[in-house]
Length: 207
Image (tube, rainbow, N blue to C red; front, side):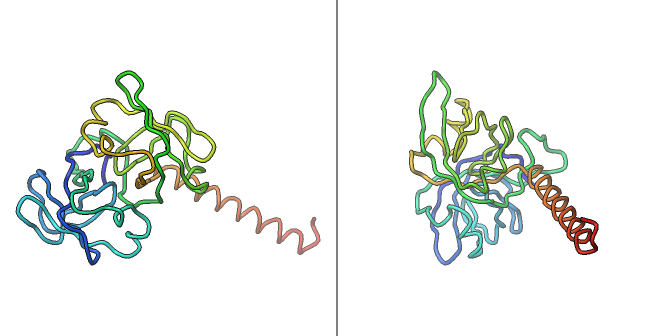
């Protein structure tokens, strides 16, 4: 489990054959530790000087922007939450739901307004003023719009994550709020149950 509060911006040393090598200043990473890389929960499989290596599956490659990275790319890093840690952002699982494209970046005084375009199935899981993890960063949706959403980013977050290096047209990983996933599942279950009941009543002549 993660919080979406980025601890370090690491640098890709190499990426090939479903293995990624990352240079980072994060201390105390051990083999087997979970580390969120651009919001993707990966397991440190090998340690290197000033960093670690991790493997990722074809499904992870398909669902995330890892394949768009290259040597020198900057990635947001967060170690897994400990029982004594502060819950500064929101509950982030590190399981990516899809991707979104940055359609606009503009500075508003000291803040940055960023607009994202995404697929309909992702957009339907967002709520105004709700939480979203973008490349692993816990952010609040400031407004929903047709085919996407916008966020306002404070200077601290912009300067200390890879957002400061993003440009319009770049793809980012999206993890929707886990609470919305449970609500969606319960609603679907309720709808299916009601549909089955109506079908039974109709088959037996009550409708």
